Length: 361
Ligand SMILES: [Zn+2]
Image (cartoon, rainbow, N blue to C red; front, side, top):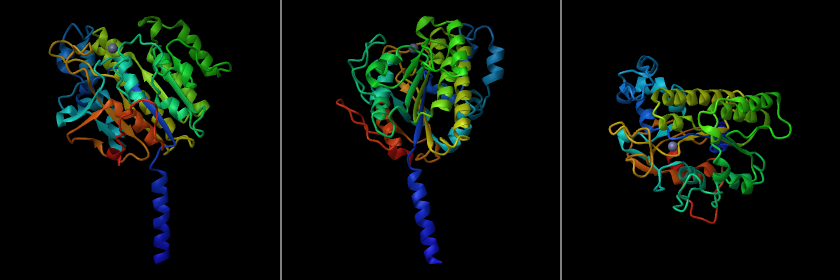
């Protein structure tokens, strides 16, 4: 009997060990989506303001309002507050002193994405027009590992991702904005996505497409090319906020939550991914506050727009839900964390901040 027990013990420890790291990881960002909405749901002051509710406060209140904060945030992000909160961890609720911030001093997109992926809050990266990124990103580092070679891909609604991730040097596909997907041999779905993308409405000009295209491009790639490391960058949350359209901002965030659910449902029903895939969800920067009507904007003159958040779920991540202890985390810690989640140590010839794996246990 003793023998059987010890064999069972060894087998279960081996299983536990192998599940301690993710074979695959999907990183998702939704641009400039505030921690305030993630943790507290819709803000009634902004929703009540005729300047921001797009003439339909009835719709947003019916859709997203509850007097109870837990109910309210679940109405906005139902997947995040059921499955991710049940199986994963969420950081950034400042109500409990749980803080996640930009370490870079700029609080806008290119510096934020640089910080997420290079682990280095490089002060020389100071504009959204910044040329191809000289810093090494964790995705290209992973793509250089023999087991991950050609198993890395990125899809972004904004065309700046070609420069942020230095597509030319990085040597993995970065499909952004209106670039067509599928390469030389697109699938039937990719052909349709490309045709619709080309003819689609362009509310954000030629630099950024609607999120729906980026999402379905990435999903098709996931299903047909089996990447081990996939990055999806949604952009509408930031665009609608800049134009002061709170209803569309909430709808975009809600839609991202729905897509997270679809991605997770696919992952957990596909043998290539089931129980061996982690998801890592965050944002590039925060935004201002409702008081000065600054929620629409973000940069280092807009108070609080350095405040961000993080949600994670998957192998090696204990189910702890919303973290309610005081701590200070920084965006620059994400790159090494992404590497460590997949079992690697990210190295580059610039500083890389320490990971936060100790928190996930
Ligand atoms: Zn912005």
